[in-house]
Length: 344
Image (cartoon, rainbow, N blue to C red; front, side, top):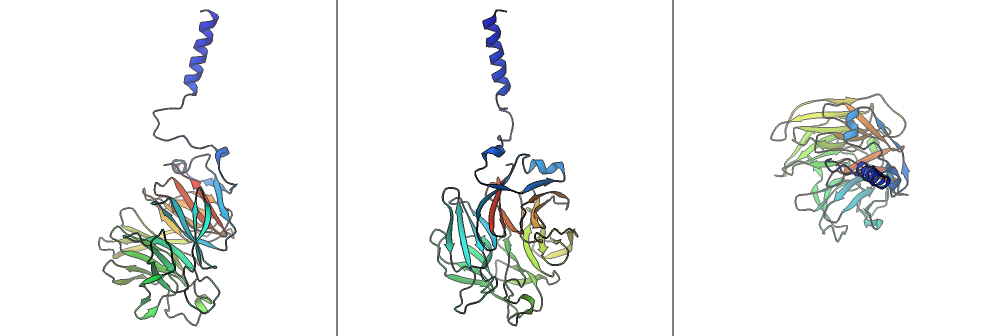
């Protein structure tokens, strides 16, 4: 073989060897060096299955900071932006990849004229079947609906539900719609200025409720000390509720086809604490994995309750939300907004 032919063959084999695999179902993951923002924290991998959800070189990016206590992230697919609550200043902010953060709505959870402290703003945010913004409004102690369009946000609200058996809620915290647009939500005391000791507290329990699409309100549980984050399995047969007081704990309710509770059990209970948060918000992905904020960050459980890993933000972490393709997880934690890219 002459020298020129040898060199040409070597160059061809080198290029073929470097060519990306065209048969893989997974797109190439962006390397760490391509993170657009400052990074933080780490990923704790406790089971190999976590690698099918979060790439080995994934990083936690800080998208924005300087808030007070961020909560309630909600991805809006029509417009490709994220909404999230900043509870103490009674505000909702908007984040986009191009423009960053801007104020979206204020006031968001308390519309009274008397000045008050504590956590008066909105917490959990949802979209109803018509695409209206639904807010868990701490200060007004109700589930509210913003009556103006998403693209023209104004603090004009209609009450969806505000009381149980003639008594005002404590402070609706988080919610989830099922496939038939029945609303499940939690009602701990965190929005009351004095919480459990507040003289304005009317209910003698902290509830988990179901508000049906026929406007019937049902108490699911009054036994969870501080019900907080809430989510449904993809087949709607399981309802998961986090408790933010006592030992880090999540409860699983088995549901029948009409949305009634068949049974309940402890989904996961841990004595682990690290000074950085407690069970709070959660989301369930299309495969039934539960992404639940807890001590240290976001815990990832499989449907059987096994901890696959943790996204360790280094902050008290309040909630999380997927984009519409489940390729990104947005995380609200303390005064930060973060994200981590996921395997599609």
